[in-house]
Image (cartoon, rainbow, N blue to C red):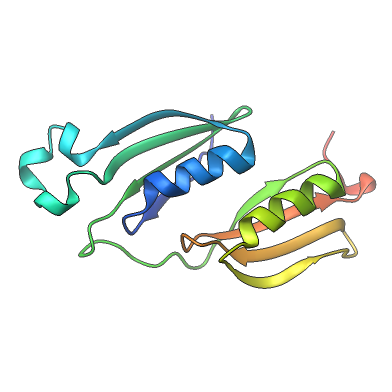
Length: 140
C-alpha cells in the first residue's frame, strides 16, 4: 500500500509542479489539462488550460494534483506536507527555495529533534515542513 498526497490548486498546478520538480529533484510523469480531457466540453473556456490531473515522482514517492475550479477550491488547512532530508545543507537549500514568496511560519532552525526544521506556506498556498532529523531520530 502507498499513501500519496494529492494537492488541490486554485489554478496554478502546472507552475507548482514545475517548481516542485525543479527543487525536489523529481520528474513530472503526467500532466493533463481540462481542455485535452473528456471533460473539455464541460469546462469554461478560460479553464481549458488548467490541470485536471498531474503526477510528480520524487524518488519512490508520488505527489498528484489538479486545479479546482473557483467554485470548488478550498484553501488548504489542517495539514502540512513534510520533506525529510538527510543533511542540514539540503534542508537549507530546499527551505530557501520554498521560502521565496512564501509565508514563513517557523524559520529553519535546530530543534530538540532536528538539526534543521522549518515551516512555511509556499507561493502556491501549500503548507510544508522541512525536516532534517538528528542522527538518533532518523529512520534506518
